[in-house]
Image (cartoon, rainbow, N blue to C red):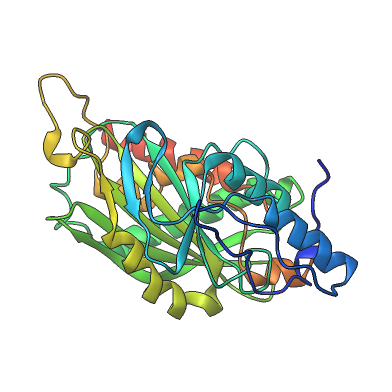
Amino acid sequence: MAIFSFSIAAQATDQLPQVDSASEATQPTPEAVSPAQDGAQTFLASLKFQTGKITLPNGIATIDLPTNFHYLPPEDSEKLLVEGWGNPPGNNTLGMIIPTETNPLSQSGWGVVITYDEDGHVKDEDADKIDYTSLLKTMQEESEAANKERVKQGYGAMHLVGWAEPPSYDKTARKLVWAKEYSSDKQGEHSLNYNIRVLGRKGVLVLNAVAGMNQISQIKSEMPLILAVTEFSKGNRYADFDSKTDHTAEYGIAALVAGGVAAKMGLFAKLGVFLLAFKKFIIIGFVALAAFLRSVFSRKSGK
């Protein structure tokens, strides 16, 4: 199937197809639109948006969505990420959460990518001891080191500017939240990577919002709603951990923030609205950064 260019996406309207009682998208009402808009609407109509309480694949967790959000199952999420946002294929997600009132192909579009990493039960004893200022400095140094490989491959460097929201951990709910701000050598605007981690019995549920920095106020107000309704299913919760049978992860909270589990999803390349404006297809290279961060923290944990 042909890839939709961002020149098409940038001309799309901000309205999503309406959802019927079966919780799937219906065909938009025919109206006078340009060929570009028509193509974008046809693409959106092909996505199976779902609403209400969602059970994620394999029954690992549930998300009881408020009315202002839709869910896209993995197959349709891959379609949006690859054909709509220009990411490389093979993202292996558990789906995506999309605002109902915003067209994901438009300049104001954003979404939350859901993945699960079963690296083991993450101990959180270090949560109250982390110096996030020092951790950020280390992350910035490692990011710049990884940028050398990006430049060698002909891509612009991506710079970790700082915390868009400092890390905070709810030890009762076992939920971790933080946000990072990035800048690019080839773009005039900054991008936002907003992160949620929900710790479970055998792994971590990963929710990453990808958007532009100009959307941070909206993201900050919307993400707590998603955080509050995301829970592991019975038998998969943090409290269900059995030290006699279950594996313990080789890292803690600090590594989650720095890139341990988060890194495996490649920090998806949809860098907010300015990608649409500049008609770029793909910004790549975070996979190399992710691998680098994992190797660093693996060495540190082995000391």
